[in-house]
Structures are given as structure tokens and as C-alpha cells.
Amino acid sequence: IPVFVFMGYLVERANLIEKLFRSLHLAMASVPGSLAVATLFTCAVFATATGIVGAVVTLMGLLAFPQMLKAGYDVRLSAGSVTAGGCLGILIPPSVLLIVYGATAGVSVVQLYAGALLPGLMLAGMYMVYVIIRVLINPALAPKLPPEERNIPIGAILWSLLTSFFPLALLILSVLGAIMFGLATPSEAAAIGALGSLLLALAYRALTWQKLKESVFLTARTSAMVGWLFVGSFTFSAVFAALGGDDLIRVFVVGLDLSPLTFLIVAQIIIFILGWPLEWTEIIVIFMPIFLPLLDHFGIDPLFFGLLVALNIQTSFLSPPVAMAPFYLKGVAPAHVSINDIFKGVMPFLSIVVLAMVMLYVFPEIGLWLPRKLYE
Image (cartoon, rainbow, N blue to C red; front, side, top):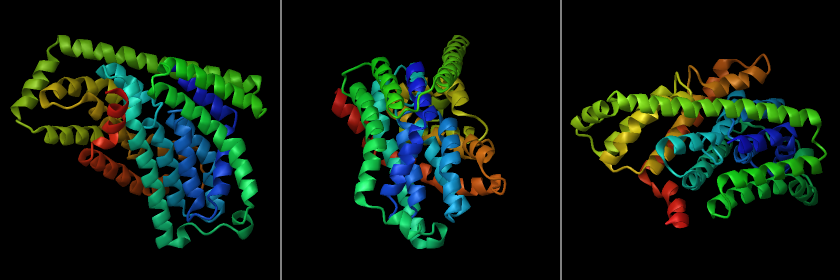
């Protein structure tokens, strides 16, 4: 965890994402809602470098949100794109949530990463398709960029992508590929990624002693938080089991005579509702030890359950009244942008998350095909 987190903070502090966003913006200039689509694409790439939602939303809120407003984009569409895109790191590897869930449930983190990759990319793609369709229906939501910003020579676009997108994409694919194909353990791959991000920052002449010090400090703080999550999770599980809580819950749920599908739906509805007042940390630490012992009885794969939970918990960052992602954006947004505007912009994307969950229910191979192909 510390090395993955360090990789993400270093990429953020060295302003590599700003270069990435600008190159994607150039490449997608002719796409309807190009700035919003480029924002979502950048968030998806950034999510593979860091699973820290606050960092992604804040950075894109400073980088992309003002540009969309300046271009005349609808405030709600712009806010929804930043906040929803910023939460993709909860699901897309290397997600810290998946590491914590894997340790809590005794599931291979490598298999969780493989399982979460396609659902994460699917969700990002659904966000982009939604933006494009909305803009095609109502072009006033995202006016076309001026001709001088759309008619960029192809050579300039390719050079921009070659010097920003491809190096970072190659680094990320190398790290995830090494993990998924068994070439390196997650710790070894994370170390390679951290070294690669350090070399990229040096190559771009963006690495300073201050930025390196900030990255190390933030890494230590985040790692300490996650470490205490492990302590809290294992302590709660042990005490809960020692006091007979597992048996009490199991007898009660078994007595309801639920089908496996009904249990899955009820469990995810509970997690969805818990996401309103709680963050993912509390949900994983307190409620996963209650659900996990029941999976054997209903014949549910803990890997599949974890993917549903990771997809579902994104709603805890988007759904009012807590909804940390909108509050992160509000903290850096212009004064005229109200929190109500941000919440209204988030709601369609929240609906897309629910639709993605339904798709994963109906077509579980979306999440299970890659782990089975690689590890069975």
C-alpha cells in the first residue's frame, strides 16, 4: 500500500496529470462534450496511478472544472464529470479499498485487481457515453470549442500524446500487467511503479525536493490511516466472532429463507444506504465481517461479492448528505458554484453506477472472466 500510494502522490505532485489532461483535450477536441470526456478519461488513467479520491477530485477540480466553466459548459454536467470520474479509483486497480477488502475477506488481491479491471473500465466508458449522448441531445450543455482549439495539426496532437499520455500509460500497464500475469508480486510491481514515476518526474524536470518531501509525508499519513483500518477490521472481526455475533446473524438470515440472489440484492441495498452517512472505511471495517461469514451458506464467491461492494461503495462518495466527492469539489470550485448544483450534477452519474451494478448482477462474467482466464 505505501508504495502504490507514493506512486500516486508523486504523479500528482509532479503535475504529470496536467500534461495528460491537456494532451487528451487536444486529441478529443472534435468529440461532443470534449472537455468533459477528456476529464473522465484523465480521471480513469489517474485512478490507475492512485486510488485516493480526494486527490483526484481536488486536482481535476482545479485543472479541468474552471476550463469547462470558461468554455460555457453546464455547471451540473461539469461538476458531475469531475466528481464521478474522481471516484473511479475506488474500483479501478490499484485500489486501496480492494487491498483492504482482500485482507478482510481472505481473497487474493491479484485476483481482485483482475476482476475489477473490466467493470472499472466499463463504468468509465458508460460515463463518457452518457456525456456524449447528453451533449448530442442538448448541444447547449457543452458548446463546441473555438475553431483554433479544434483544428490542431495531427502532428501536434501525436507529439503531445507521445510526450504525456504514452509514458504514463506504459508505466501503469507495466505495473498492472506484471501483477496480473504473475511476473511480480503486488509489492514488487508497486516498487517498480514508484521508481518509474520518479524517473518520469525527473524526465519532465518536475521533481523538486519540496515535492518529493510532500509525497513522502502524504504517503506516510495515508499508509498510517490504512494500517489502522486493518487493526480496526481484525479487532472488530475477532471480538464480533468471540461474542457469538457471527452465529446470531447467520441464524437470523438463514431463518429468512432467502435465495442467493435475494441475499445479494438485500446486502447491496444495505451497503448503498450505509453509503449515505458513512465512508467506505467504516463500511469495510464494521459491516464486511458481518456479511462475509454468510457467503458460504449462499454459495456466493467472495471475489464476486467484493467487486459488487467496490462498485457499490462509489456511491458513498457521491450520494448526499455526506458525499465527500462533491464537498472536495466545492472546496476548490468558484464561489458562484453551489453545493446544490454539484449534487444535482452528480445524480445522473449515481444512476449510472446503479445501472453498472445491475449489469454486473446480470452478467457476472464481466468481473469473473479475466480472473478465471488468468488464474484457473
